[in-house]
Image 1 (spheres, rainbow, N blue to C red):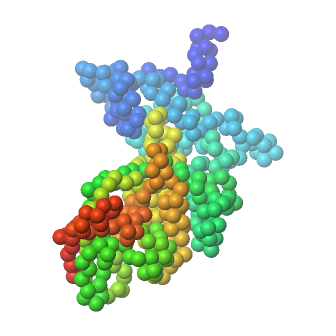
Image 2: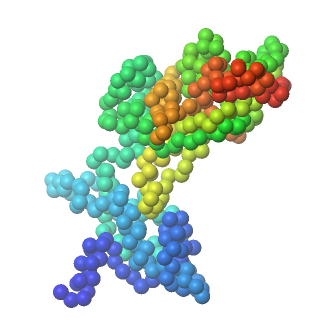
Image 3: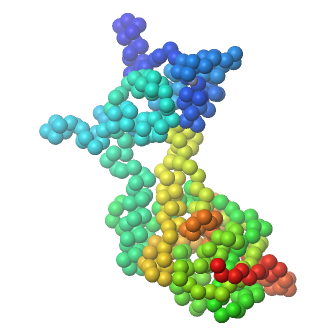
Length: 400
Ligand SMILES: [Zn+2]
């Protein structure tokens, strides 16, 4: 076999051909690929935008293709490596197949390339022109997690009890990903963070009688018997501390449409120690498939983003709160009771986005009235409290 035959075998083996061209990060601004180009710059001219420099700033497209193909192959493969060929039914299942253009679109590369020649070169260099997802028969991981959550939410809304689910972690009928514990452990591992001691949380309480609330007893979490309405994260009769990271959000959160109030009492509660929480207010972006260190987190972070959105959805709690909040209530209790950080501490709350327009972030802490005190209480009463109300901070805001 001659030189060209050998080269073809080499290209076939590695999955991409060869071209004597260089590309610069401006022409390929996908962040991970641009980083690779800069770290492996070997050329002083880009063959796509024709820019030149005295220093090396572009890389050979051949070198870059190694990373592109290796990355794609973490989620895609050639149809013959996975799919059953059914002659009687016309070959491979049609919905499994993507051509190279479609596949590059699916993995988020096409959107970063404006230069048509560059795009054509990349497509042309890739040896296979037909692709399928490696998970065609088992379903994309994130899709399975989302379906699992939807099934779980439907079951909980239709009356499957908390105790049934919590005791058995029962399979709801659509595979391993529907186990609530499994879903939530995937999420928890992806997004634990810490709220540090000294953080100020705002909490308000409305008055329709003109009564001013003066202390932690009145402004903090209510006693168990007064929790008469379901809340986003807690059932009737379950006490949690709901707070916001800014005053405007705290006020907006407690104003229900059509409610008449005279004013709102609002105070600052200061966190007394660092506490681990599930972070659903600020969720990371789904890592690029071209990021070799982070791409294994793609399904978990995509699911986390979905869940953060689900949990922050606006709901009229007086109308449909009981059923609609059931899934987030269950998930919260499960998380509270079952999830532990790597060093064995239980998670103590969940940060989430406000569903009120133009507002910031909220937190629900697994703290009852017993964990909240006043900053001017005697030391023996203050000690051991998780939150202290700064009584000087209390103010009264007229209803708007
Ligand atoms: Zn360029």
